[in-house]
Amino acid sequence: MDFNMKKLASDAGIFFTRAVQFTEEKFGQAEKTELDAHFENLLARADSTKNWTEKILRQTEVLLQPNPSARVEEFLYEKLDRKVPSRVTNGELLAQYMSEAANELGPETPYGKTLLKVGETEKRLGAAERDFIHSASINFLTPLRNFLEGDWRTISKERRILQNRRLDLDASKARLKKAKAAEAKAAAEQELRVAQTEFDRQAEVTRLLLEGISSTHVNHLRCLQEFVESQATYYAQCYRHMLDLQKQLGRFPGTFVGNTEPASSPLSGASLATAAATIPVVPTVAGMPPTEAAISLDDVAPPASGTRKARVLYDYEAADSSELALLADELITVYSLPGMDPDWLIGERGNRKGKVPVTYLELLS
Image (cartoon, rainbow, N blue to C red; front, top):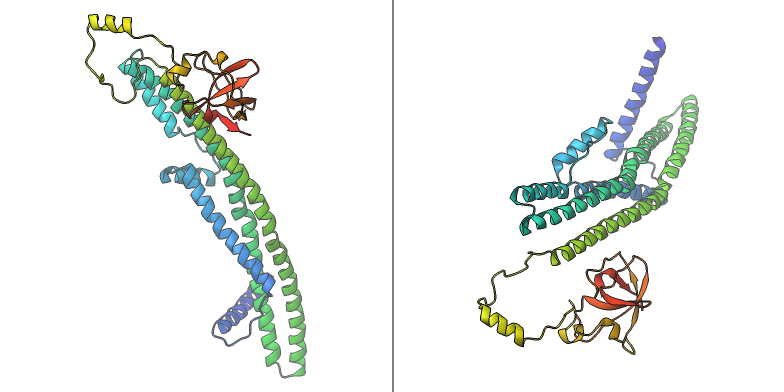
């Protein structure tokens, strides 16, 4: 009990001495030991790193989960060390509504069939979003949060200790200046040497931690690159799903784009028979003018110049015999024909030849 009281009294005395020193410094009545310029730069860089890490972390959380109520709920689950319950994404919820609507309105009708197709794609988009959120949370948010809750707390603790050691040092210097008697001066000098040693030791510990911010930047850079890769993968998946959906809807019976009203009045039976007898039937290929589409692609020779190599970005399933099926990462030769739709090229792979969509290609040379 006596030991505890003595320690309490000693701690109270130290606290009072530091408070007096701090107050006198604020009013310009006491000298303050300044840190060197390099140390001050390390402190400023650490503070800047902490502030921007907090902002990037919070805004990334908003990007991944725009609903503030959901973010608060996830925060509480994390603080309680409980697993965050699985949450349905907006795309998955939209897919569910479209599926239910199609079943109620008639899954065999053109509208119902289209609802089912779009719903399937929205479900895939929702699943891709879920994977992206999971990947970004683990590979990007978690390292940033670990820095703020781990390394930064350690740095802050050691900086507070360094501040106390500096106050003790400057208080010792002040007492030495005020000492008159030889015995008091000798005691003050000894106290100053001890305070200087403790300050130097703590300054070195703090300096090493502050210099470790460089390693933090390297780690955060790697995490940022992984975040970019996850985001690029997510958007590429969404783009591929939407392209597939567009292709399905373009071939889907009863799906109309634009004005659904006939451009002119329907022909009578006699007029229709006359028109059928007089208008030649020419097979056409989407993306090519009728005069060129009527010619088999096998009969078309590539131009003498203008052919290029292209790398296939994604798998592509040919819609009909005029198109060339593609496999991701394969190399093909491509070229254009006069009058072709700019969104399409002619692709060649060995003896196979067909139209290919430009959006699936990376032109190399």
